[in-house]
Length: 176
Image (tube, rainbow, N blue to C red):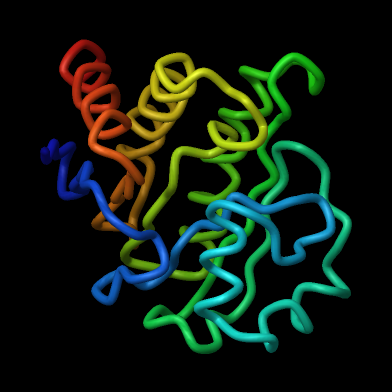
């Protein structure tokens, strides 16, 4: 599914965040130490190779809602933007912290002149954020930021499963 505001396109697809060849920056659902982990962090670190963890080491730790940028190493992209999403039920206020992740990632993209960014569904895996609530926050935040973007022309949500894509599509239909 695609939705455009001004000249920025928002896309929702099912796929693998670590294989977005036509995207300049992919977003990592990072842990505080920016190390290899499970889920998205594991997939990105495995595909990028050990150089990514080395580059991340001096940038850690980060706090929920924060984002930092590194090179992409062996990934087909130029950059990785690492965001630490909130752990649902623990990091408060979780809705604001999750929105901050998307806002801060787009702020970095804007500052670096990046033209395309791919997001996973931040905080919905091991961090336990319910998919529908996370999709509402993510999509509302991105839609609010889209009119302010100059360099970013494509924002893609790369969703792991068909059901995750369906939830995001349903939410986008309501909020756009």
